[in-house]
Image 1 (cartoon, rainbow, N blue to C red):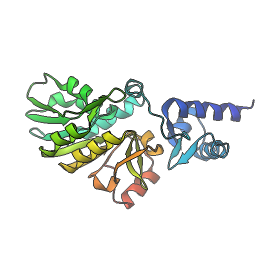
Image 2 (image 1 turned 90 degrees about the vertical axis):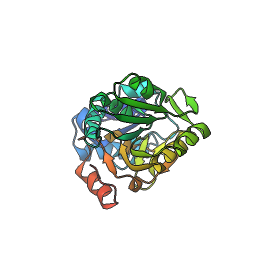
Image 3 (image 1 turned 30 degrees about the horizontal axis):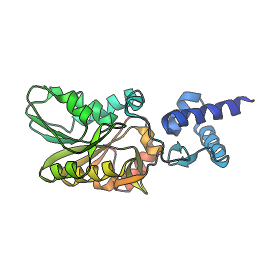
Image 4 (image 1 turned 60 degrees about the horizontal axis):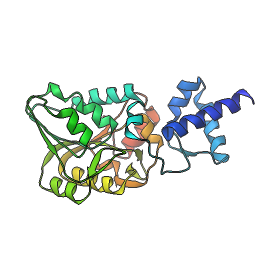
Length: 251
């Protein structure tokens, strides 16, 4: 087996482990040019081993869901960077919403620096993270919990959110696409996230660069429904320009 075949097999293993891979990750991890990375993905797609997307590739099956604790160990530096950026849009006295997800969990870990903050979430793990934080009012929705994500969703969660007014929501997703919008794996969670976005004056999409090469099953809404996107520094200028032209700028 030649070096090229070994590299492509390694790329496929990375896709299987994470559900997707970004072009920038291939360039960095395998020390190849962007043209070579694109060619590798083209060949792998021709072999029906993956599906190319804008900026990367995903597994053929869109039903692959990575468990929460596995995702916590993926792109941790990028998620910390996103959390630091998100803090710029939070002020003392804010009422913020946090959907479930690992990126929003990293945001929650940094909220103890604010005063008189109200946090509304449908994620049990985020609520646990915030319990006992001085000066923070915590509101946890009801609903049915999924052990894959620790999110509460369904009619009870939606009924709670209907009675609340949120200033800023930070929306975590499983995939992002200009054509399909913000996506997630579970239908009930998608509906609850839509409800939280509807009750919010402002919604910020928070997603690391790998999410822009991943598709998922259920659409939450269009990216243009948000104030903008908070992501990490691995996002390419090409991708930034494409989303900005579509009315969904990176912040």
